[in-house]
Image (cartoon, rainbow, N blue to C red):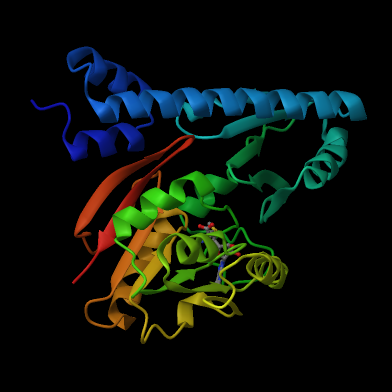
Length: 310
Ligand SMILES: C[S@@+](CC[C@H](N)C(=O)[O-])C[C@H]1O[C@@H](n2cnc3c(N)ncnc32)[C@H](O)[C@@H]1O
């Protein structure tokens, strides 16, 4: 069996065993560039994750918040997942405040107060809070099943805010084949990092669509500060009903089941010849098989890109 097919790379990412797979590939073919790059990326992720755990622990100690942090066993060297264990329920409030001050965003669940926190600097971290009583947050799994709304802003949410790690953007641009003749829209654009960076890296015209007013305000500030403000705009709108006429590239970064549910409707609304690119580390159960799927590696981040083109 050829160990180095794209399918085997994608399976290794989906099954969270990229490091062990890449080690095996590297032993078999020491010159294999993908195996070398994957191992470097896993190392960088491990080290960033350890630094963040240390930073959080130091801050908790400084503030006297009773909580332990560790890299999640689910992380398996290819994602930035942290488990927080508050000493008791009384520590939850101070923990939430501490994380908010560190720019983490807490997510509400029908089952209670925020148990999942996401941070979106250049890298993205997710903290899963395990309560003193042993209740482990199920919010992410529930969101993945698209049964619960994570977002505080209402029922039309297609997912929480978690930014694409900025280091991945060049790989996404290359995968999508974006050029200065394209008009790209990012549906659910967060802080518009994709819109700004794609415009900067390719010369394309870009639009971000976002329904959270606070994120739209942040996106506008980012665009204003950039050197591509004449080609980038953000709109406060519902991405699910956005008019896609005239758009040549649609970008999506959403929890996998939500992305899968959105793809057929988006494809139907797109102009002939336009392409759709979605990325996610988890498998997207496609009703519409993509034209191409590929593992995208960056210095400190991994994703699987899916391209639908007609
Ligand atoms: C996973 S984030 C992706 C952010 C950005 N695309 C990126 O890759 O950095 C999903 C975003 O979709 C936004 N969102 C959720 N439901 C939406 C809707 N119905 N219309 C517009 N934006 C929505 C969320 O507020 C969040 O910012």
